[in-house]
Length: 226
Image 1 (tube, rainbow, N blue to C red):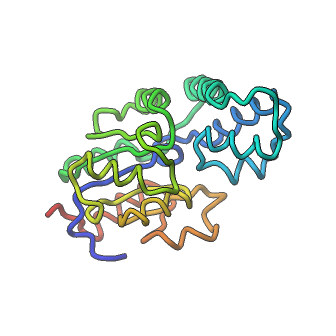
Image 2 (tube, helix red, strand yellow; image 1 turned 90 degrees about the horizontal axis):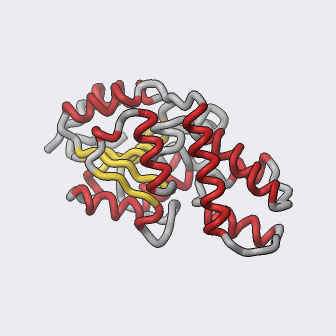
């Protein structure tokens, strides 16, 4: 891992990093697409977890075209179901608040950059109770292309007033890691247990298995604000 003493901001992905919502997305997507007559497999759902809902619709429509091509309506149905599932399920990721508090005390600028909609992000921040820690929140709705395109990370860095080279990103997906690396940022990957050994995460500067490890890494490498 390179010397990070110059880093000034930490940008978090949301699903799989701040909240354990990935399994809920899979449930909602499978339910909604099944109602449309789309034979969605577990493999397809797992491999498309980093896509925006619209990108997912486009992918499935090309394979299994159904009647009305109303991707916006499908997105609304999936997001609505995910929101309900988040409200009723245990979605905790250990260490979220402790890490954010620590980084805040170290005077880092903090942001969230997610492929999810702002409506869903608001629900998540309220459920986890961490909205107050973030200086800025970016959604795929704010940019023209979602991850793996680096646009959302350029947009977030600019909004924070920090150049990309001074940003550290925490990502759980390979497409997210690619997006942040293509933006010229330092990236720590935090894959799920199932994805931990997948090829592609070697693009990250470091790979960890929990946010508590992130806390340890920051302390060990004595990351300071310039």
